[in-house]
Image (cartoon, rainbow, N blue to C red; front, side):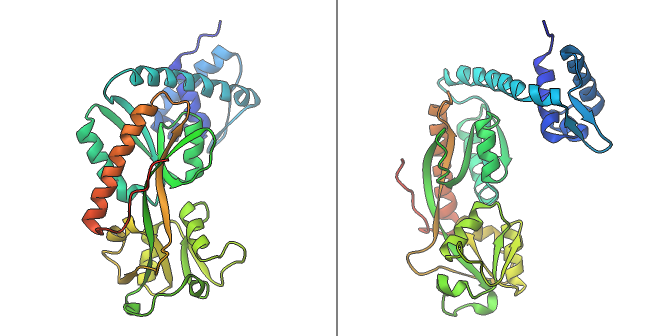
Length: 312
């Protein structure tokens, strides 16, 4: 019989993901020597070397690759067991692992966390901010309970709940204040600043500008909405940003914010979780809190700008 502890399996999982003892130890909140010792004990228990140690990083050996998915399945089953226990309770308690995409998290997250903390004080909230493909993968692997993303994600294994819609606004240099609003076709001829590839908001903006089939004349990329707006303020070009980001990102930039003519470009924000999740009922309650948070944020900054979408 192999004697391996659950803690050792979690350490293995962290190291296999980070491929670095220091980062894995930090993620596990232990010292690097302690992590190294636990990994060595796991290797001794399994009778083989799991990681190839390099000067800067580590990589899985062939044996390590073979056991990695099995260990993740074991950890997923253990986490699911805890979810079943939590689902049997009447109130929301314990750990909630929630993911958000970068074009939502900085603006919606503070209000959501505040409301969840007030309405469900026994929740232990863990937040993960990254791009949609990574969030979907981590949901499938059981590393997240739910994620707030732009819909649709069209993943058969996930439940999608639409929460609200919001428009995209045009951000131009301050000197353009009062000039005619360009059409989507006119944007194709302008220096358009967009988020780098991988962001769903980039794809949505390109879709509005009908740029999928042919490359735009001049597109510059950035890693954040904040950088995009500051570049516009410096006179480099124009950009589109979601309405929830306007109040935060434009307060210190010399820019002009303008609505497009109807039909305005928009996106649907929703929550997704595994269809097999035992926390489905509780996550539906969480979605209501997110809706309330979005309503409060909208009323605070731009009253009447977006509307709730019926549930699906």
